[in-house]
Image 1: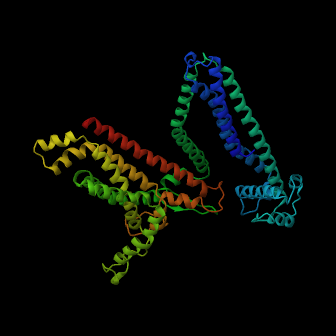
Image 2: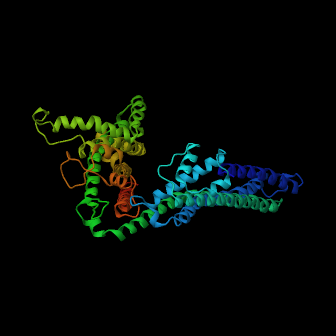
Image 3: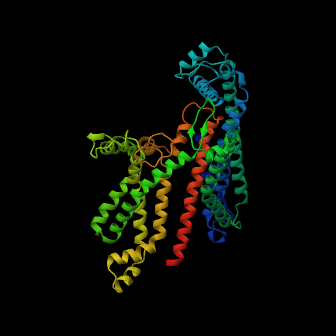
Length: 492
């Protein structure tokens, strides 16, 4: 049974449980609601939740675990000598999955029966021609090992799906029967339902934490694999980034970290003053009409896709900077400091424009949250409006403003598309903002793109870079928390 149909069956069973559970509770009380411990709906909810929640949980876990277990078993069937020199196990497994899907489509289309799909011999021309009839194109020849693995993949998938359906339906029916059997007028259905809802709410609140822990551990394990193949001292203290998939790679994070921080600093130098001044104007000086028009218009910047900002950097800002700094005697300044449109300054300026709404919108909300009584007190003591803003409003709103700035900093550090299109791809140390550089996020994308071997240090380094980036943003959050607590104690 397809998973979607199985979910619909569980929903239907839960709805039936609600109706029958409610009717059974009323019948046990002789139709008198006053004799029930809880309202009738609680008895129905108890049966419905018992029928659907455990079954959905098992279905979700099974759906996640089954593909990984099947792939590990099928991958073990492929002998190492059958893998070509420029091919990896992951690429062979993608061929296995594509071939298995093609066999399924051939069976569904009537081109091949189920027995024939499992008994098909590895005759390359016959298999490719057969699957071509149902529109499945194979990128390589079908070896006997790949065909046997695909047939095994189909068999295990079909068996696993059948067992999943049986187990989930039995669990749902078991929960239905157990809850229905407990339903009577003295059963504390409200307490049970509320405890169940509380457990679901706790689980929902824990998803963010569990997701963060899962991300950290997934990166940590792969990073440990990387450091088992490459020197940690070269990664953290080396000065050169030069990946070479043929060996002898120099994989130091320091040039990438320098480019990341340099571009982020320029972006913040653009975004923080403009965003903060815009927030002060909108919250303290602008009329209601201007504010209602200007603030939504300003926040549109946050909704523009980053690829559009990247195109803006590549096609507009970069050539504009080249006309100013990079055309020699024909340029506006008569100098030639910039050789191409990609540079740190190009990416920093465009990224700063992108970050303006993050600073202005959050700062505006924080400044508006400062009590009006503090403004009135300052004005009553003879301070001017500008003095009130500088000496009362901004200090009181400082913790939130710092949080907004650090949020913008984290956004800048994690940006990819603007850097790819506006900053270039050269990893080096330089103080010249008119030169091309690259960042950690750009290198992560580069190292994981293409047909690469996930067992090589040149690919695994992406996880070490990601873990370092995570630690960096975590440090920013800790710093923001410290500043917020310090000033909150002062102004509360």
